[in-house]
Image 1 (cartoon, rainbow over the protein chains, first blue to last red):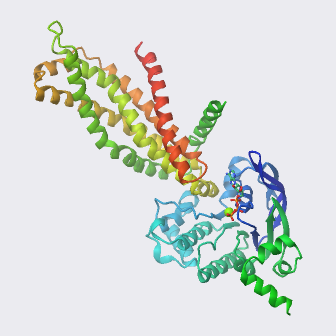
Image 2 (image 1 turned 180 degrees about the vertical axis):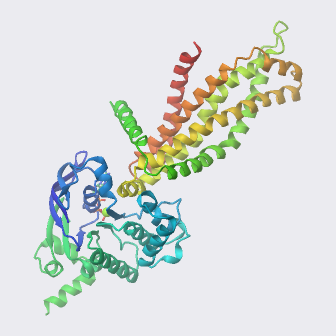
Image 3 (image 1 turned 135 degrees about the vertical axis):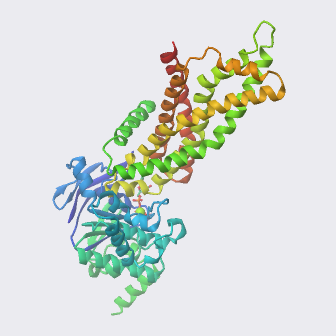
Length: 253
Length: 246
Ligand SMILES: Nc1ncnc2c1ncn2[C@@H]1O[C@H](COP(=O)(O)OP(=O)(O)OP(=O)(O)O)[C@@H](O)[C@H]1O
Ligand SMILES: [Mg+2]
């Protein structure tokens, strides 16, 4: 479980997030949605400590990140897996080496066990044939999958996924979504997914957090999402024609 | 104000760089890779420049001091002294700042803007140490070799130019480069070289590490890396010359 308390973040004089309070439950897919530039990635980076919040605190299972010593923070980070919006694979390493990287840095395993683990993770994202390729040699969608494989290599307790679906075809997108859901349930991770893909939200979200106008504007479950009566939220989720059709169908019973 | 900010942040970054590494074996492997990339791959340009540098010093010296009162061996002597004291350690380091410094800043800068440094941090890896320390050690170890090679080639280039054009006899030149030799100047040159190597690696890494933005900013960081490395090298050159030779 991750709790965010009174979190605000400004860059210089520009405020991006204001007084965010949220609880992300364990074993659940928590999805953060919001317009491009609304501060979703910044929120995720504040939670994992890549950005220092201007105000507020973050608690990992009751442990305040803010108050941890440097060494404790490093320890905690080995429990965090994160897929970045840009995938952030290391260009000079092969796909296999990328997935093995965190294991090599921290795990006390033999080379063979690490290779097996990496292969297992690559299989989970259905990309095991590409182990010897370099990131530049595979497609953007494949890079995302490798990024997920790397994020789960260390069996994280907390999984952050920033836009896993952008740049993916609908079918692959569903495969990735299901994978994220499976991992969450199977390993009981606290999963936070950032997305603006409504398919993904309707597919796997357990709890939805809508960021708008610097604030946590709305929070609720999938069934609640469609009948929130919240204008800004509706403007966001019904912007696409597919969702408009869904809404029409619901209204007509 | 901005200068103080950068100096402060530079030293804080260095404190990170030199804090305890995760896996020494991984660092060592990275250092060897960097020695190849930053050192061995600079050998060509360093050799070429050094040969021509020595050649030009010889011709310049000869044409400028052509007087019956000055003995012929002075040409070789001048080439040796100026090569070892300044041209090889300083000029070649400035050239390396251009080549190696821009490479370092571009590499680290693009890792920053493409969230790869975030990825390292999030894994709990000391990103500053992992990325920067191998580069510092690699340049500090390899640049002295480059500079020694440069010294030989520069003096050889002088001989080549002098004898081929016939402005000085081989015997006079060789007498000159042996005249009144104090080995301390080599020590002095190598101390400078190592200091300059550390400046190139750290100043450039600093520029790359704190890049904000996209590919355009990576280019800007890369340019800044070269300019600031050069400025700091020139200042340190002055200070070290005063400190070590006066
Ligand atoms: N390091 C930074 N320095 C200054 N401003 C920043 C920084 N990072 C993000 N911002 C600003 O914060 C705002 C929110 O950015 P963020 O990347 O969180 O958006 P997002 O919701 O993830 O958008 P997208 O869906 O396009 O990824 C943007 O206006 C951005 O310009
Ligand atoms: Mg984002």
